[in-house]
Length: 313
Image (cartoon, helix red, strand yellow):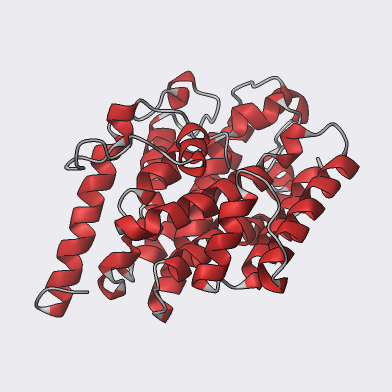
């Protein structure tokens, strides 16, 4: 999920209406997220100012474990790296001294400050172990479980940092996380194909007739479009389910929900490309993304106020 984000300029990274210098003097974790995870960096800027650094630490951790597969040449080396992160997380809960690492140190501080749920970190790391196997997920359900174990579980932690405990917010975060992850995997398909990896569930690939040789060669074929369309439809369904909760989500949770805007925009572009995930135009960044996020955040605020009949929390 890190390869679908792109580095943006400082102008495009700052949300409309942000104060001068909003992106100046970034901390190491904020700079890392800005460089490698544009979507989440921009979304975090809509969180309360006193929570942004905590979100950057979470997103930097997510980047670190997401890139393990592409950083190693053998699965065993990947397992060693993931185990390192398990031990780094363990230090936060046992009171041990944090490891000296640009991400691990701030992450431990955040875990302790907000008493974050350990099981969420464990699930994220365990799910990332699946990246070490080059075989595609067997079923669509397995792919959705992967999406929840990575992207949605990260959002559960974001809600904890934002001190949002409403059940409807957690339900919406699950749908946003899965929808965003599925859209992200479609967006990253050219990179995955070049790397020899495939996230098209085997059951979908077999049913649509995707030829692994065509996929590896980045060929636009009818079976590939059919498989892409099926995954996109499921992603859109999750995002639509999240939308049903829009009136019940407090404003302070909007940073957790904004990735849905990015996912919806990509799915629209994919539809225009007739579901060819290798279409060259899909590689171009959305130069208006920060404005789309601003508009969505404003709509969330107005929707919440309208639902309450007055100013909300």
